[in-house]
Length: 250
Image (cartoon, rainbow, N blue to C red):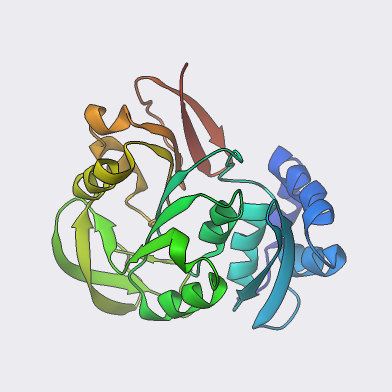
């Protein structure tokens, strides 16, 4: 479904992130009027290749549905997961078709990004969108959870929505890797993580709560697609629309 409910469109005019997105669409995107038409009103055909300006030059991104358009604006327009140019290590739980990864990888020439995505079709599209960056990302074709093992992963046709605890009609059995083991193994190599991004459709709160104090000492920012009522000791918290942002206090 491509159409946004009229009530949701009108409500956006009262939210700061909408205006940040609007400014950045004109600042960074080729053909901004077309982007607005697609993003706000759900118009336009797909697949569609878009171009966006980044610190490393123009980046082309393939989108396969209106829902991918939403993700594109969230990352490059609304700046849901803001990344400083000086960062060097990002962990991306729920990489989907590589839009968020592309945003992180284009902040500078030295960033290493660890990607986690279990759906085969998403993985294929991710690899297309990240052509040329193969030396700077590591992809794990697994779901992220609270325990190691295998589990049913629910999803829908666009591939944007799905998760281990989803009630969506289509399912696939996937490998699951425990959050703490993943973080610990990355920290053994990188020693710190600038950004941990979590978008796993339902387990975000549980994953945040499972992060150990020892690992959190070596993470600078945690961004998660959830409304989160708690806090993280040693971090400032900001609820930015539907994304909670934790940044380490100085």
